[in-house]
Length: 98
Ligand SMILES: [Zn+2]
Image 1: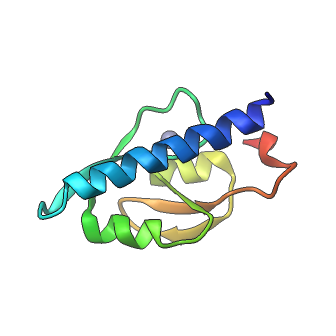
Image 2 (image 1 turned 90 degrees about the vertical axis):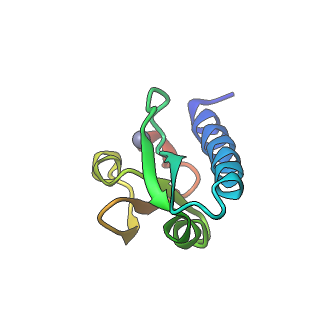
C-alpha cells in the first residue's frame, strides 16, 4: 500500500467518525470534529456547529480541515470560514504532495 492510499483511507475513516459525532451531537449547539487533513500525526479537533459541519460535509469530494491546516497542505480551498475550511482532495497521482 502506498502512503497516498494511507492518507485517503485515513480521511475516509475520519469522515465516518465525524458523521458519528454529528449524529451524536444532534441537538447540541457545537460538536468537536476531527480535522481531516492528510497529516497522519494531526489530532486537531475543530469545534463546529452541526450546521457548519453539514455545510462542510455537503461539499462533494471535500475534506473538513482546520483553517491553518488548509494553508499548510497547499490543497485547493473550496470553502473557507473562520473556524474551518474545506479543501478539495488532490487528483489521483498528485496526492503525495501533501
Ligand atoms: Zn489537520
